[in-house]
Image (cartoon, rainbow, N blue to C red; front, side):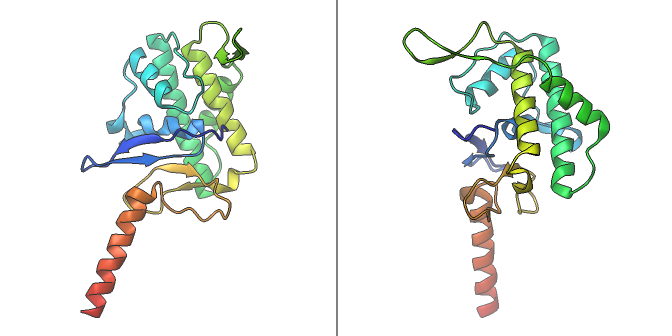
Length: 199
């Protein structure tokens, strides 16, 4: 789990842009689509899409992985398995065994390896691959699900939002994917309800 968050810019169904920081690399991957009804949000269609996601992710520096079509499919499979595992976690249910196998198998592969350039800057060793990127995401998921913030993995409290985040705030009372999106919508609804009661 990387705490140096960039955050992602997402768009609501009405087209309004807002910032969403899920708090972990692995949860950033869940914004690219998912299993079942989330398939309609799929953005990982080709190798270039994986590169675009890596560019928006919290990985520093941005890796520029060489990705094959098979690795794109593998990353989607990992994401869908991770989605079901994290969803089960937030509900307090047992992890789906097959999805856990997929997650653990990805985590067991070689991940992106950091290195130091001659000028002292950070870079990734060798030529990053899609498999290494998937392994890095999977290891981040293992760290999150077995680490000190595991009990703070939550789904946004808005009924029509399914974004998952880890609450890394000090008090641990975060309820919304984003205060500028779902948090603001809740405030507006509450204010309207108050005015209706008073009127």
